[in-house]
Image (spheres, rainbow, N blue to C red):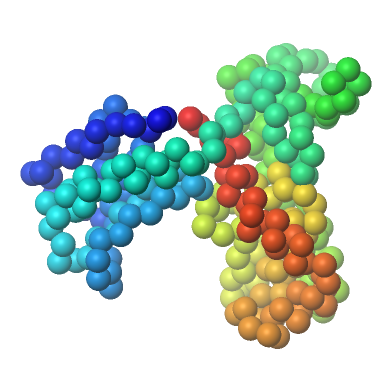
Length: 256
């Protein structure tokens, strides 16, 4: 079991909202959240945040929380064992780019090339992403490049869908959102997760269509889905892909 360990929480501690509870000899973080409307202790595992979250009612004592975690630690370890291994950006790692697997190549100091470039490798029939510069900076450079690629693709598709629906947005923002793939503010700002660049193009296109439709309908009612269908009739396939495979995208670039 990758995550097997023994809970070691001081019974004298005063747990605060947002605090992380440490596990002895284990990398599992447990985030403590006290909620005024919670009626009972709950424990869940977030594969995107790679952490466990314990929600605690206001009246619950630290001792009750500790006992609850002790009683559920085997379940916790079992759930963490189901989380796919993290895939840090490292030499020879395989990551998806626009839904196609690519091999990472840390190229070192390569003169006359850009920061990142793509190459085909006839020997392996696997396209490669080459990252220029010192190896220790390669993961950060690759992440920045992926963010730039996501911004480019998402801007183009957002622009296309907004024109198609007769709508307009203010600007787009690219983030590393964990709880959602996109959002639309009342000020017309569209926010997206950069990890959409790892998904197939039709999935990125669906998220763009989804958020653009929110410019007119800030809900998920029938009129909203009519707009999505109008601009992207085939959206259901991409929506299903994202529901089934989306959480897997969060393991790329993550640390073990």
